[in-house]
Length: 485
Image (cartoon, rainbow, N blue to C red; front, top):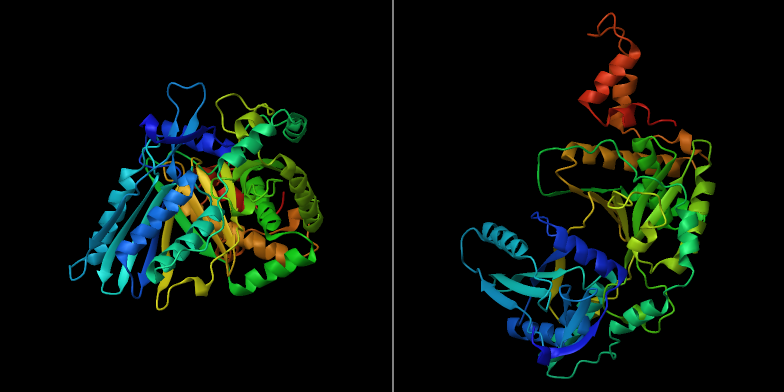
């Protein structure tokens, strides 16, 4: 890194620090916090001008020209380069056989490259020409630079820059606010009394919440499982949240708390929740590009006799109180728990995607259409639940395949959906009344397991039979006793 090319040097945000640590510690092929977005673009398209628009975007935003230094310094810093040429490539696959196989091979190759966090820019773009007016655009970046909100800003500005180059006119974009302003704001909040809040919030927490369904599978890599609630269930969920004066985010947090409670067989659970971090008193924060999100603990305290709707409102009030401390460093937060040093504060995180969609159809050049084909990203946690509630209610489970198998995660997704239906169908229900069994599991419990005869040992006790069932299927106890606590 040439000192002549250095524009600025400053510290890291809390989540940037965590991402840097996890990225450096990872020795697998997981590539934590790398993001790979694949889009299909159809219509008239100028590859050269598109690449130029991307470079203008990198030149415009300091965060896109940032690299990270952690060796030879007292604490990690990010270094903004004055100039950072974007790796931009066009590959012509027109007329070639096996295009889909070639695309899959490229995506694997691109993922395997990863990123060297000490070299800017931590972004690259490749355009694969599949037909005369059909392209696949793959752009990869490290999450340490951008959050979902920033991606929306980036895409809107990219289209504006591309349209301006097509028209031969200057792009009309607002002045940028550098990410440094956010870091300065964070530094001004130190020693602000947050320790008292976290000490009270985490009092009595001695270990991360165990799920009892994770185990050494002998597998490797990261798996994903997606489920989409029906349009009818989504509509009822929105109506329920509105009638009970809670947000969809609170409803989902409540469902995840109940599910973790059933699986762990504990009345108190702890998981991480990712927040936008943009509700702070920093002028222009809503239009700044960078990483503002943070992951902080959510503590679910629940017993079977609590009325779900009342408990959800209490949970929401707790989260609103926490928002004044949403910028706190997770490492500092964990110090206020009694979890031993080196142990994680939680083993699962919930990401509720609710950032604004700022693009409009009029932003696209005439005749051009674009759709997101896939977005692959990884976290440093064994289990991540990503929830979006835009046009549909979607649940995406991202899990460590060395700890969870596909069948277990699919069953967990089914239980979550059943809990949602149980909550919205019975507004006055108590937590202990909620059903999480799927239709198939209810039939198994009520019919298949209810026969008058079976191949059971004559001298076995009911406890022995349950132990044998759990040994064969670790998730069985959550299903068998999931109806009540």
